[in-house]
Image (cartoon, rainbow, N blue to C red; front, side, top):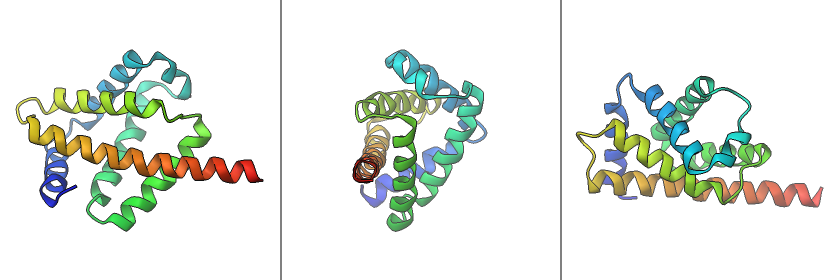
Length: 143
């Protein structure tokens, strides 16, 4: 990601203002429509999941410009998601749901540059998470 893209992600996330919870609820609606099988991965209702999602997204957006902090946080998230049953195939649906929810909630500001920045940010998150999941699975197989 370029420094400009990092700034776009951070500033647009801040532009959600008090609306990140509504965006997160929209994310889950979209995710469950795109891939209904993902609903089984969650043990909480959408309201609780939205709060947890936003807390994690806040931390990721905050850390994204500090790669070591970002990588450590996201790798931990990926390892935890391995235990939840998340599979590599789920990441595409999650990315599309996130981009769709962000586009809907940042409608006035949403353009090709912002979409590209968020897609790159998500791809970076997904890559680190999948790597950590693979490492966690490898360790479990050896134990």
